[in-house]
Length: 123
Image 1 (cartoon, rainbow, N blue to C red):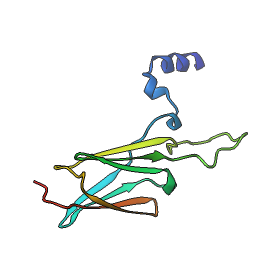
Image 2 (image 1 turned 180 degrees about the vertical axis):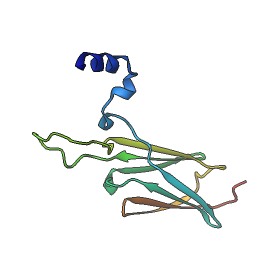
Image 3 (image 1 turned 90 degrees about the vertical axis):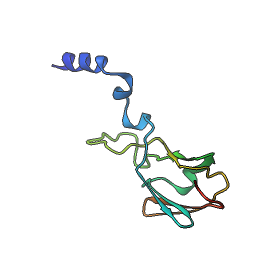
């Protein structure tokens, strides 16, 4: 039986064989347009605020960072491992340039809330 499982694992594409901690993950996000601009809420529980990077290029908002496993210790055997601890990346495409947008951020309860205040019209 163990041999057949090993054979099956060898046939799987490399990305599927990787441990969750070795993959980049993409957090869920909500984007709402308001009169002043946009509100973006990103679900990144367990990420330290100093591990979060936010940048803008043209009409794309890029959010990246790392969630680290602070519970791992030598001698621990995992029983169940579902949470991905690794680098994450989220790119959000807007219908117009957001280069000149002012960004205010707040991070609490595992949610990063970005308020993008636009300076001009988005057409």
